[in-house]
Amino acid sequence: MILQTSTGLGIELGSTRIKTVLVDGAGTVLASGSYDWENDFKNGYWTYSLLAVWTGIQKSYERLAAQYREKYGAPLTKVDALGVSAMMHGYLPFDGAGRQLAAFRTWRNTTTGPAAEALTERFGFNIPQRWSIAHLYQAMLNGEPHVNQIAHLTTLAGYVHWQLTGEKVLGVGEASGMFPIDSETGDYDAGMLASFDELLKSASLPYTLRDILPRVLPAGADAGCLTEAGAKLLDPTGTLAPGAVMAPPEGDAGTGMVATNSVAARTGNVSAGTSVFAMAVLEKPLSRVYPEIDMVTTPTGRPVAMVHCNTCTSDLDAWVRLLGQMAEAAGAPLAKPRLYDLFYEQALAGDADCGGLVNFNYYSGEPVTGLSEGRPLFVRRPGAKLTLANFARAQLYSTMATLKLGMDILLEKEQVKLDSLLGHGGLFKTPVVGQKLLAGALGVPVSVMETAGEGGPWGMALLALYRLEKKEGQTLEAWLNAVVFAGAAGSTQTPDEADRAGFAAFIRDYAACIPVEKAAVDALR
Image (cartoon, rainbow, N blue to C red; front, side, top):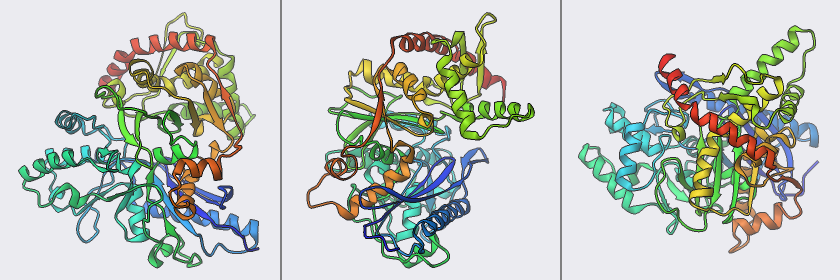
């Protein structure tokens, strides 16, 4: 069977899964594949090896190609457009021969505090610890020998795109997690580049920042084509032909915006999986710098305020696995989806304030609450109502508690207006529950589209299609509304007053217990 349609392939390297999605010209999913992986903690850094990167990409693509062959009775020999996205930020330095100079330092690391603080003061612009420039400056402050040899500094998405195309470029949304972007020019901020170059010069380093950073491109721009070598990297069987046009590589924040149609001003989205972050596309700049708020951009370069929290569902996942082991020991094993649905549904039966239970889900540090490390922690008063339903609700509240503290700055202090807030990611796979509780926590309606489960890889496939199909002068917003989201189905949960009051009580206890969490970090070294 030969498909009479354009095809777009999106590849996303998430924190726990690498997924590939193939779509037709209307954005409908034709086939998908995935591969589970985990980060390693080595020599003081959370990291993934580049060998694991390519093993995962190839396995994920192999599974997509097998599904395609099964559905359509023919091998997948070509795709028209392709795009790569990955977890944002991090640090991947290479020398002039393309050799990796240091292990990939992911967004999860909170080892760059001195650098981030110094650069924030120097630039008058919040530089989060996970940004590439913070990692580079910290390596300089640490006197790491490799900094003298850097010829190219990129992110994971930029690295994979480079290997597939030979092009050292980044989409503007992904680039905004490396270094501040000037939304007027759609490029790195020139004044801040010059300021950092003074630091490079004073350290006697043989390059400017512009020399080593990827070139910045907006959505829809020409980012090269899939080369013959790139096609063989993706599909070692040699079945896939080269030649697909490539979209600028993006981060998972940008693909989340596209997947939820949240790229226009006054729109926002919440991505909730291993980490959780909220994006609000701004109408005007914030009144001042906030260390809890990152300033990034949409894939088209619009300014976005981002609240990013390092941990979301990891602790909840651990407790669900434990309960699954109990069910198995009792002779009543449950399939993973059913286990999660039961746990989430129990949360809706719990008291609105969790009966006085408090949970910290911190697997790593959380800059929003000032912790450089984390320790999962469950706390309760002796008289608290310890029930399964309250425990489940406390776990879900814990996934969004730190996000709430950051979002209060935008919604209350800065009076940012959002016409819509759309959710996507694992927290929303069970219908209604996560969506309803988040609406109560943030005090704004939360919508979930039927396509939300496809997530970032689908968003990247759409950006690939936009690169291929956009008409002259057609904006990304206009293209998405006309081609992909016209008549799209979804559901909306408005804030329930009981949920709002209950979460307010929970967050008061949560904030009061932050010193307890800090004490746990100090005690459990």
